[in-house]
Image (cartoon, rainbow, N blue to C red):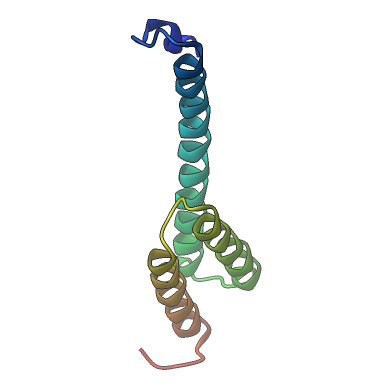
Length: 99
């Protein structure tokens, strides 16, 4: 993106910071979108009647949630809440516990 040239920064270091911020913002947006898509895929797998590969999807989802919390895309409490609620739904779907 070349929008950094349109900013009002006049100092070289300020221009560099604008470029860095744009790169980081773009990557953070990609990472958060990837996380949301993975959580949606997990929820879709839970609502589907066939639960064949639900464990593998759960492992992948929890891995992404943990990584997002570690990298700072989401907060630790948010990650814990996502994992707790998804794991509860997994247990209900697999018949391990009552609702």
